[in-house]
Image (tube, rainbow, N blue to C red; front, top):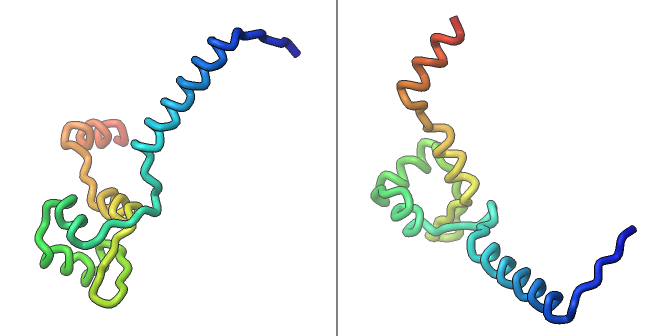
Length: 100
């Protein structure tokens, strides 16, 4: 095993850089099991409260409810979007040509 000797200044600079990186990662990292409420969901998706209710009633998007308050997991929203994703026509056409 090799040993590396650093000056105190270099060691402290590395520690400061790691602390800064950690701060940035915490800001951008969103856990998959984070929840948004119905108001945040409608704003995020750009739909009305009625459309959100229709999607819930039709079982298109998963949700949790406590009393009148409704929450959506970010992972459920991602699944909803994945389930309704359409490939661009150019890509779909190329895939069809490859499949024979």
